[in-house]
Length: 319
Image (cartoon, rainbow, N blue to C red; front, side, top):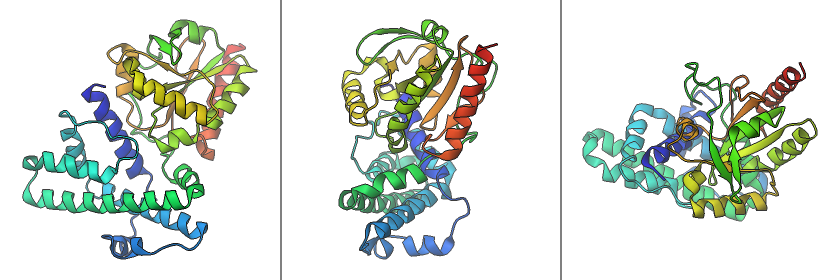
């Protein structure tokens, strides 16, 4: 996986966290949650209390990443220099700490101390989140679906609207079983095609797979289809393909997923997507319909917006 793709995914993760916050910061809560010796030490007694704590911890992590976005962006830019991709299950805070330490010379002493302290707190939060998710597995999906998707219409989402994005970029790739897929044949063969960009370790992405599979079945009855593009699988990464197939199978998702070369037109388009999941609606002529849907369709607003675009494409196809 090339460095630019890694940076895009890392920035996407940061934006998902930052923009998932509730907006205005609660300074009292921030003070209470600072460090790992107060609220995080408390043990919930019920699943409801665990869910509330899980959400509170996520909000605190969001607040940390929202406090100094320019400095955090500098951190992620440094991660472009050969940094390995975050592995599934690895503590995100530990990744940040390593990135900051490796790029220590790029920051002032004050910046370095603030970043190190903030990343340490994120690491503590991540440890507590993992503990909660292992002890109360039923809370994880509820918390992630509700808090980790970005609102529809967010303008941090996608490639620039410079006219070249009117058409979905052409590609010739393969599905996860190795069958050739050509974009012109794919789009022209459907009244509408929904294209969902995701990656394997993105919780909101995985959380909507079942809903996407159901949507694909609905679209099939109307002459349409849905495809997925797992960004880890670009360039035919065999390990990533195997992992993606495993996740799809566990979620019961049977719709087609495709990959293509990262240095092609569609690959370059993909590296300019900085928030996940992101979903496009494409008409029979290969034109992108409306704006992309940013965030999981498990959210009501995203689902309603997506359905409107699908209906628009279907109506236009019928003339």
